[in-house]
Length: 477
Length: 141
Image 1: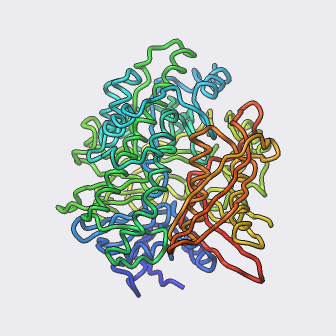
Image 2 (image 1 turned 30 degrees about the vertical axis):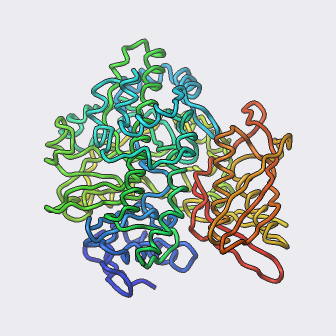
Image 3 (image 1 turned 45 degrees about the vertical axis):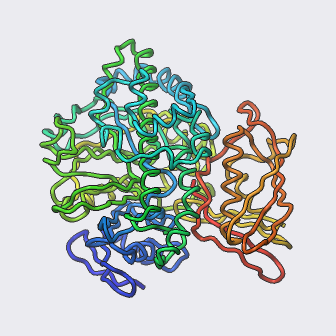
């Protein structure tokens, strides 16, 4: 049983013991601590996975789990670990298969009354136009040389092709293109799977939601982000699709061999890794960067499709739909923290930089980076802003969503898709899904309470609540 | 020969059982198909041969499941049933040959469930208990 010491209200420490190189830090409430302790008695434990991450070579300060944490494969979801560039490792277990899965939020400048007046028509148009679900094809089919360009340029490539506005790029993390992507290190198999998948939503927990600004907590920041009460935004949650999954698949054995070659002791087979500076580590990192760009491109294409639907349904100009921000939550990035360059690896965790950082778009820089938090289906989502405190404590990182509390198997046993849809309909939320089973697995009861999860980071000061969003239409992959 | 899906908070566990290692692997493949689709809606119109290799039996299981995902995705195919024909060990390497029965993906006919991103190294286990082979791993969904 792990020792957990309360440092302050919602901040807990698991002291360094055994093979751990650093302690672990948890941002959770008391009830979550009890759940984590109970969970430690079972096969899948966040605390054990966190200890394993803390034992990786070159890890800095502490391994972090945030209030949305739950067991993943290898490393916990809702986790952050930063590594020294010279001594540290890049590990598959943190980045995972869905590279740069993230959220893009668009401002529509339409009020909820306007949306509600055409809600049915809008939901049907979105459902028909946004390619989603298993096996579906996107509207932009690429040739092999084109996909290489896309992997190097990210969202910029899609905008150049005419699917987006130039200023979309300004409001994407890394301006939609991370440097250091090398398409040569991405297999033909991975590329082949992506030719037809650019601009597809995927399935599982991926979604597109039309949301109303229900409550404003921080007037000044909300204004800077262009948000007004009762106005609506669209949030798109998806990742690098099959290309990212295949990069993961391809590098599993590769990194296992690298770990053996460099005699790295790994506490869990899924934490296969390589030293960042090794040629294997660099090769994997360049492939991850290609995956990151692929996800930016994917969300850009979905942004374009969303604009097309809105402009048709509401007879408005496409430029009325503006990108508020786009941020990933499964990434590995070189960032400067307290004067030192580190490789920050986030799994189900969002970058949430405090005010003043040059990575933040100029328009928002004085207010902190927008952090886009997806709730579970039918529940609230949030837009937070990054804080200085996060820069000191969590390598400028925060939560990504509610976090699962029940397995998919358990969720399906308890609910029935039709009942879920009906009960959400009664609350005024239209849900459209490509898979009924998917809706059962994603039922709100399978997730933690988003309000509690957000409260922990807000009260701790890791990020600040800006607005609360309420779903009106939900399109599930 | 049978399979089961077991619980994991974020993802899903696949477990295949059989009298031989081949049977256990076949069933693990069938478990994967069960996560993805309603298999009774798919017909066995054609078979596709799948070959893969790895340096351990455990890695072979992951490579094989991921190869199934790759083939279905890149060929727009949906499998109903997998039959692993052979698993051979040669010079410290393991080789698998499987026959996969199914048909072209047809949205008007097939009922799909959840997309599987990949089979992972997490919870990866192959064991023999009371003359029964059990192969299991966690799939990322």
